[in-house]
Image 1 (tube, rainbow, N blue to C red):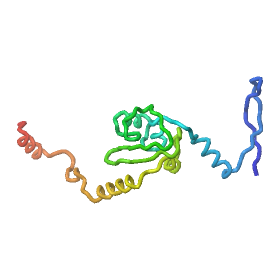
Image 2: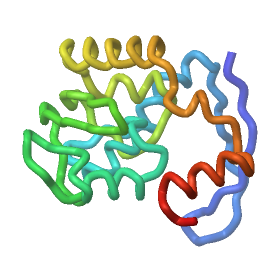
Image 3: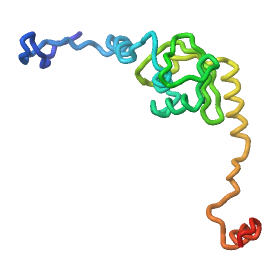
Image 4: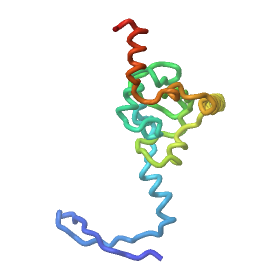
Length: 166
């Protein structure tokens, strides 16, 4: 059962007024909260969408990736201010991994991971390739696994003799 409470508002004459506000139940509030908080638009900057879809932690990192050619829109290099539309295909390269996604929704707000996953659809080939890469990485040894901190005095002398510095 909703119950009223009061908040401070402004009247048409710019005076402070107490207004009654009806508080709704939590489950009634959730769908409207999600829709208002993660507003959907028709067009959006590509760097902002990449940030909202949680491919990059900050918007400036997303913009740097787009500038550096790590993100391609419909197989073409673009600038961070390029407008993105629903149905566009993106190739995103982050480290060793590559995502091939299709834009399903546009959102200017960064939300939880569940909401971010609904913004795009990854192709099956891309998903299979990423999972195979992750599996091979788990099996292979780390290249720096044999290194144990700084070289000893003996190792430094051997390195100098090998490189011809001393």
